[in-house]
Image 1 (cartoon, rainbow, N blue to C red):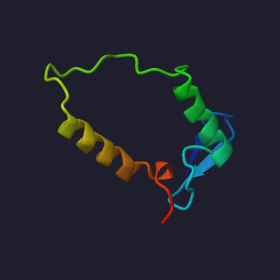
Image 2 (cartoon, rainbow, N blue to C red; image 1 turned 120 degrees about the vertical axis):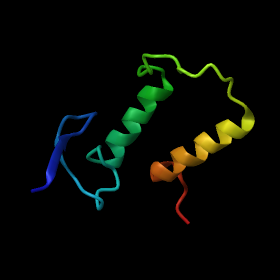
Image 3 (tube, rainbow, N blue to C red; image 1 turned 90 degrees about the vertical axis):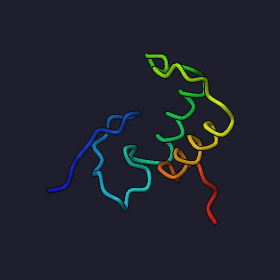
Image 4 (cartoon, rainbow, N blue to C red; image 1 turned 120 degrees about the horizontal axis):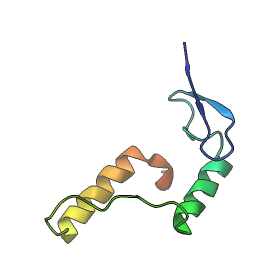
Length: 78
């Protein structure tokens, strides 16, 4: 039985499957609306980072690489 989720933007029901490149969103439009909300700082992480260790450039690069691996919609098509 497929998993059904609500699109975070428009609340339409979306089937959660690997073929849906916009999941959890229903479309590219809803995905971009959500990205715009983050860019306008309408969405925020509610808790500060828990680590006492300051981030250095190497750590930031590693975090960015990991993020891009899991969020392919930020990568230009080859």
